[in-house]
Image (cartoon, rainbow, N blue to C red; front, side):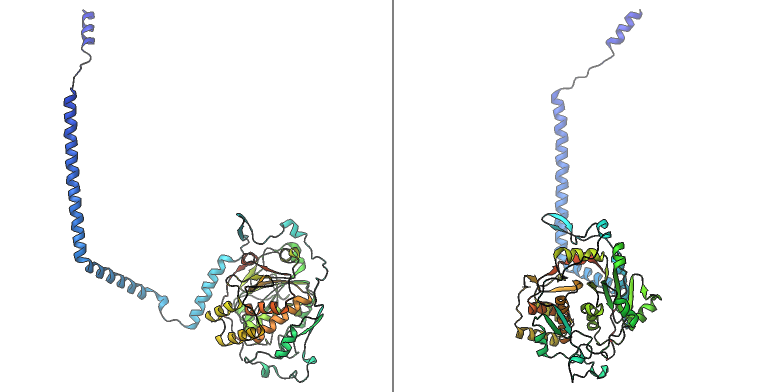
Length: 478
């Protein structure tokens, strides 16, 4: 009995339902026809909507344009009403705004030590190739023979050398913008100018400090300190235009062997003291020895700034090397390492940065006028003289780029470089304060200066952090 029941159960456990192929195909065709119908209806609806939209746009496009324009005008008007910075401001408020913007820019650059690089031959390398930190710590000032030069010595013309040139006249009587020559510079004639470019073993040239009544007065204590400097990094801020940025990146060897000197006038002194930057009893602020200059010779503060920039050999009579850094920059490299990289390693006596934008004096003159950095009249006087003298329009003189940027100047104090800097200073006094116009002229006239390192812009960017001018420098009263 149980066996029979088991067999029945197994025989009915699965049931087969057969479906024919014809019936299956019919169902599939029905579904396909439904899908095609729905797709066709959807396409017709989309085309109808598209046609309607095009008709509406063609019919009412002018209305849409007017609505959009009106909305834009309302939005801009609301912005003008809400913006307080478009309201008239006083000169003091405007000056504060400029200072705040400059301060924000400075914050991004201050104390940066990262190297600047460039790609050469497909390989990225550092622009300024300094020795390793270990080598810099053991770097010393080399004892070098005087480089071969046709100029063996330089004699600086003073009031004692020229009779009847007003050596005892009062400074205020001689300080005029008409010629800018005064008791500090001496009164160089065009004939004396031409003779100063004649290369002799003993060169005789006007080079500032013409008369003891000429101005640029420095205390005896500061003079004594400056006479001890063998290597010096210098800067200046006249007219209160810039702050003093502490140098960074120095080795302990440089800290012991290099002087850092900043020249201020009394305007800058007052401005810095008002901001809490007080000179210590030892005459230092941080690493900088601050030298206060009184009785500046020129009303043009840019021209006053050329004195420490170009006449460092007269201010530091025993210095062998100097590095000039504009006040708008923070020097951020080891000075001895810089001298090794830009002078000693390349057998150069002068290193100065190339101009980043132009290569021709006449093109630069047009840019100076266009940017309102000098008047068209004074620039034309300078160019007219240079044309008469035969200055070519070449982009290079003696195989070197004509224009320099000159915010960083690295040099060995030799008779030839001292003469070059004196001649450059006299050109700046005679013509415009834009020294990039006169530097290539001086190189061209001397013809014998060859060992100059005109380094590219990226090297200058590695040497300094650019901070920009903080505020407009105040001119001296005439």
